[in-house]
Length: 413
Image 1 (tube, helix red, strand yellow):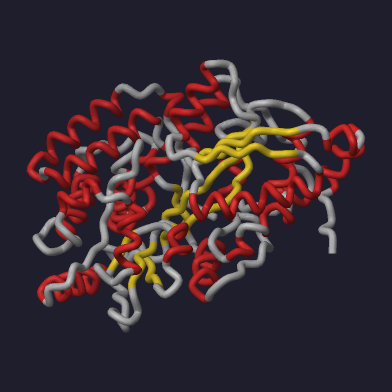
Image 2 (cartoon, one colour):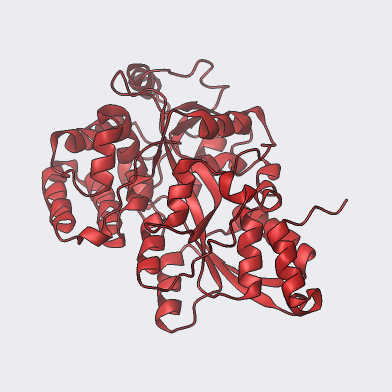
């Protein structure tokens, strides 16, 4: 049966004439390749079937660099999907992104929690971005056949790591390579530990650039990460091999049974069909129930009827349910049914019910800060004795940030 077309999409079709829109096309740029690209193309195909508008999609890991070059040349895509709110804000403040307030109206405007409505505004008082999908980052994947009873506390996690290491089995699957942004899997580690060790307010100040990198809680988060993965035998291969192992290959090592645990976001679920996960444990009492999340945000660089129709479709219930129906993605929109496995249902429940969803800190930082953070994560594992120098250097970058480059986003739902 043909899906009901959202009211705004209907209005756009009627205002231009269906035949007129069916002759239009648009370009979309995002980071998704491989299985994620296949899943996103299902969304694009459904939109084309609904409207007749053809979509040309480009997926690249070098999204930031490609988009910046295209914008500088004056030839941006119609729509880009960005994983960083800081990048969205930068383009909004430069006047490159078009406002879309009248595209997200009525039921579509109210179907998102305050956390996601804030991200849609991108530091303004109107809608500029549409969350396409969200991911839960505060999870650790494991093989139930190897670990029948997963740890529930940080002490239990460290004890499990030590037992596996003593038995000659590599506890951790770690891959920090992710060209051209190698190091970001390491930043996720530091972020999760800081959130669950020092709490949401310290995390918020640090993400906003008002908490020093050299401060005791931030420094301790790095040391806690090191205590888990730096001892010999803690990482498959060794720590140095982790520096050049692609994060996707690290996930494959868990699936192949070459290591027992992986700290990776929910987007890895597509390759972990036989795996389960447990929540990232609190390092200190009182920080239970917190969860780090990320989101991919669609923004419009052109203001055409085709662009507006696509943004309206992405915000609609129809557009939001297609990818989650495959069981490999999660929608921030209330009422979207999650399909797939019991594992994906648990992830969706956490995203809906966690008392504190805290946005990925490095995604809130401006590009030069997050880039320095990524490089520091690599450098720390390469030579942990240089930690204090690395943190001092990161504070120098932080000190050079302008006030309008900082994003202050509270944890919440």
